[in-house]
Image (cartoon, helix red, strand yellow):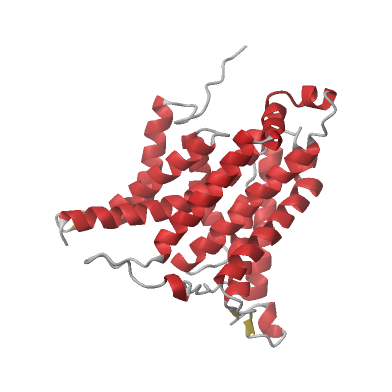
Length: 316
C-alpha cells in the first residue's frame, strides 16, 4: 500500500476506536463530573447494551449455561440493528435510572473507596449472571447488512460500519453537549455541580436532574456496546476489559469535560491504530498497542495533572 493509503487506513481505524472510547468516556465523565460518583459499573452497562443489542438485532446462540439447561439454544428477535439501537438506548437509560435511584444515590456522600467497591461488585455480579446464563463463549455480532460493504477507497479493506460508528458517536455527543451547555436543564446540572445546596435553596429539586444525567450517561455506555459489538465478538468479561481505557479517557481529557473526553478518546484511538499498523523492520508494534495508551496517559498527566481540558483545582 502507498503511504497515503496507510495514513487514511490509520485515521479511519483510529477514529473508529476513539469513537467507542468517547461514547463510554462522555457518559462516565458527566456522571463523575456532575455527581462526583465513581462508577466502576460503567463497563457492566456497556456489556448489558452489547448483549441486549445482540438479542434484539439478530440473536444469541447458546452452547452452555442455564439457558442450555432449559433447552434454549437460540434466543433473539432478529429485529435488525436500528431497532436494537433504539431499544438499547431506552432500556439501558431505564437501568441507569434504577441504578441511580436505589444504589448510587445512597453513596453520594460516602468515600470514593465505598463507591468503587459497590460499583465494581455490581459489575462482577452482572458479568457472572451473563456467564452462567449464556456461557463464557464469545458471541458473534454481525455488522448491519446495509453498512458491511467496503469503503470505496482503493487499497483499504475497511467496512463502512466503522464510518457509521464515528457518525453515530458525533451525533450523540453533540446532542449531549448541547443539552448540558445550552439548555435550562444543563444550567441546573452545572449549578448543582458547583453548589448543590444553593440550588436546593432556590427551590429546585436537584435529585431529578441528577437522575436524568445518570440515565443519559448509562444510555451512552449501552449504545457503545451496540455499535462496538460488531467490531469483535462479545463475551461477559468485555465490559471489564473496556472499563480501564474508558477511565483513562476521562482522566486524560479532564473529569467533567465533554470536549476533553472527545479529545482524549481520539488521542488514545489514534495511538492504538498507529501502533497496530506500524512495523519497524520485521517487528510489528501491534503487541504494544495497549501499552501505548498507558504511556500516553502517563506523559499527559505528568504535564497536565488536571487533564487536557480539565479545570485546575485551586487549594484553599
